[in-house]
Amino acid sequence: MRIIPIIKRLKEEVALLEERVEPATDLMAIDDDEIITGTPICFVHALDEKSEESTTIGSVQQWGLDKFRLLMMADNINLETEQEPMEDLKDQVDEALLGWKMPGDYGFVEFVEGGVINISGDKVIWASTYKVERERD
Image (cartoon, rainbow, N blue to C red):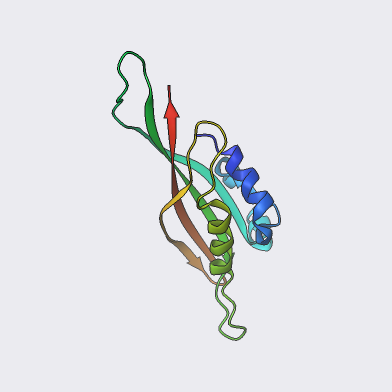
């Protein structure tokens, strides 16, 4: 699964992230202070790739289903100001990704599931999983 187009799309389309989108391989290399002061932030990584049965006879043409996950960190809700930064971030991310046709042999991005990974004081970490079909031949 190619994640660079996803990273580029999020950097271009999600204003709240201010281009703070990285591959998840960088997650361990970033200093804790940088993550805490630089929120919201988003990390992208590929997940499962599955194939479907080929219906073409005589040559190989097969659709596959690729998944990717976004790990997002944002400020927790603030009851005094009635702000919900994670919800605002998720809304912008979904607007940028849902229904977007990825370049190449990929189809349109669809949401699969999401949930809280951790809440620590004034920060929330959320994971959203998406899927996209890809033609393999």
